[in-house]
Structures are given as C-alpha cells and as structure tokens.
Length: 317
Image 1: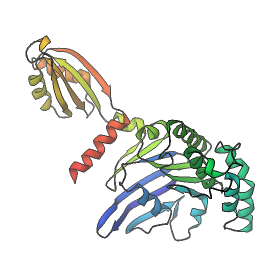
Image 2: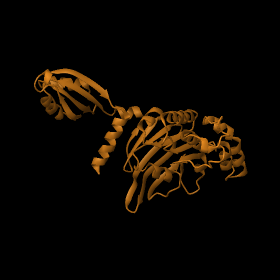
Image 3: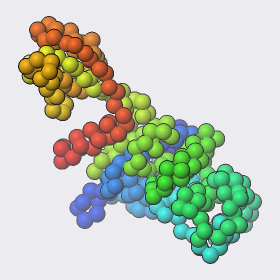
C-alpha cells in the first residue's frame, strides 16, 4: 500500500507553476527522499499533501484514503515543516508537555503525555529533557522537533529539510534517528537538497526540478541508469568522432590531449546508456582503426545523476 500517493498534482501562484502535474508514490514502511534544489517545489508539495495548501488540480491519497479537509488519515501523520518552533525559556520536556496538551480528545492528550519520555529517548535527548531549549544546539532542536512530530505515534512522518543548517555530527545524528524510525515500521518522507544525506539513508528517491518529478527509484537504480567511461587512445579526435555516431554513447567534457604519447593521443570521456559497456566501446574503436590503451569505467555518484537531471530540465525549459 502507498502511504502517500499523488496524481497530476499541480499548484500555481499567479500563473507561476510551483508544482507541475506531479505523480508520486511513497510505499508504506519506506524511507523516501524527496530531492531537489531550493525552489523546486518540495515544500509546496508537502503542504498540499498535509492539507495546508489547496492544489490547483490533482489528487492526494493518504494511506489509501482520498485527502479531504479534516481527513481522518491525517491523524495518523506526524510532520515537521521547516524550523520547529519552541519556547526557548522552557525545557525540552516542558515544551513537549505544552504541545501534548494543546488539542485533541482527552484520550489523545493522555496518550501524548505518556509518550514524552519515550520520544525524548528515541530522539537521543533523554539526558537533555530538563535543559532549557535556548541552550540546545541546532541539531538538538531539530531532534526535539522530530520528537514532537512522533509524539502522537504516527504511521507516517513527513519532514521538510530536517538536516538543514546542521554540522556533520548533527546530520549524522538525525540520519541515524530517521533510519531507526523507518526500520521500526514508520513511513518516513523527508525532503532535502543534500544529496549525500539522501544517498546514505533513503530506500527510494524522487528528484524534483521546476515542480516536475524527473526521476524516481532507489539510489542504486538512479546511479545505474548510465555510467562514464574514460578512454585512452592514440587519436582523440578520431575516437570522439566515431563514438559520437554510436547511439547510446555521449562524449562529455573536453578531451585531454597528451603530447608525450604522440600527436593526437590523449583521453576522452563518454557517458553510456542503452546497456552499452566498456567492451562495446573497445570493439567499436578497434574496428574503426583506433588504438585503445585503457578503458576506465567510472560509476556516477547520486550527485552526478542529480546534476544531470536538473540541468537537463533547465535546458528543456
């Protein structure tokens, strides 16, 4: 079952598209990374999913139920949108108590109050619960925000840029916390522009650019869509011309000429697709009379894939 499912979701402001015909599926129990540069439409999408902003068109389903204002499915969600707001002069625990008493039925309030010590421990703040929030580090405040978001024991946790502004230690702490929650059965939907964080912790990734979903899959699937091969040859110009005529091969970058290896010799890089590999490249070059001295496959990082997808979307506009 999908925890979050959107179809043809669109939001425009004054004729400017913030989200453009978006289809998205977040499987229950997964840790899903919603990746995109600042301004790509991630926060707008999250606000529509949570019913905080009405879409211009399209549909949202939460845990199999169509989203309606006041939908019961939202009661099974927890969320942290942007910077969490706390009373700095109160302790972390006292802040959670205030939020726990703020609304819902009497049974809901009692259940949230009973979970405060548990969520502080889950967030790694059990020893800082009595400390005033103004003395918390940025990472501690983010973890307190996540503790607040899971206070109601949600099935789905939605977080908007939870590692924004954190140092490497804080990022690692939040990443570990989210992975623990997902492994325990909570669906975690997290937006981010930090590729390394998404690559390290997420089961699946959706890449958003200019309000459009340009790719979706596991990090490994996204990386495997193409690879680069660096080739050392005796005739760079001839090799580049020959490879440029082969479907599925795309020369990239500027060739590196190495005069010490003879006139015209050097290195060039190509990006492969359509299942082509180093062997096929070698056969094509040799058949064309090009002497190959080395082929070096180089698998793309998620950052390489992300930049190619986003730049490709820029060029399409």
